[in-house]
Image (cartoon, rainbow, N blue to C red; front, top):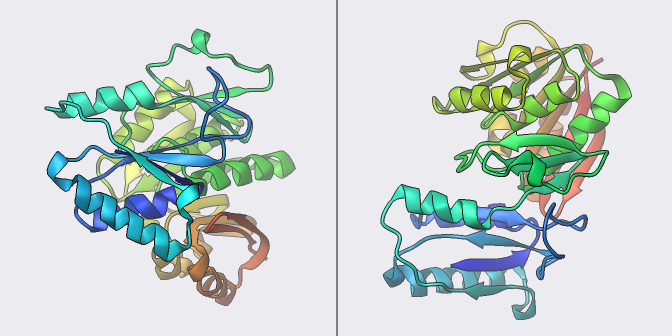
Length: 298
């Protein structure tokens, strides 16, 4: 099932499908700057969510999605579904589907591509900074709205004053940590409570030639020692509020915190919580229903 819908609704849809017990999907967003290969996409102003599901579940999922779109106020002319029957017998088949449909894209000066795309096959611009991700990443491909905002914020912060070191809380695939190393940050540390995250993040760093600059381990907020001039925390609103005191403590005086993955309805509460920790909001970022912020520590 391929579901085309307005940008920035893809994460919400994937989350609801997972909560309903209907499995995980893959999202791909098309950008104004275009993919790195091929013609301009047909759904230029939209994103696409692809899910593999048994044929017996099609009607159930179609009904749920239609109901959610109606609740969100998305008109019938702004979204659509396409079905393609196929035989899928293993995880390898699902990975093959991911490889078939996933396309490289640009974001914040990075050309993000998968490890099955030969670098020499990409139509790179002189200004592109290549960033390779691993195929079939369980932690996303960097295409979600919250990750794109984090990448843009990271690039902007490094252009203003590149930090000597950076802490990436909830590093996942390691995409933000690796991006920071590619931007010239010499010491990058990332942690995540998911046991699968550190090995994948390390592999991503090695693939991009920055393994010596990066260190990853399994752990949460309290597993990081010391204070950092820049802390990246692209999480979710609940985790940000619960860990606000720990996150603020990790930021060095005069340092900066990026916090993202916040739905718009939770923004005021998260912002107020960080304010109570003595953090000063410098910038609010928005993309669709998603919010993020850059805070400074006096």
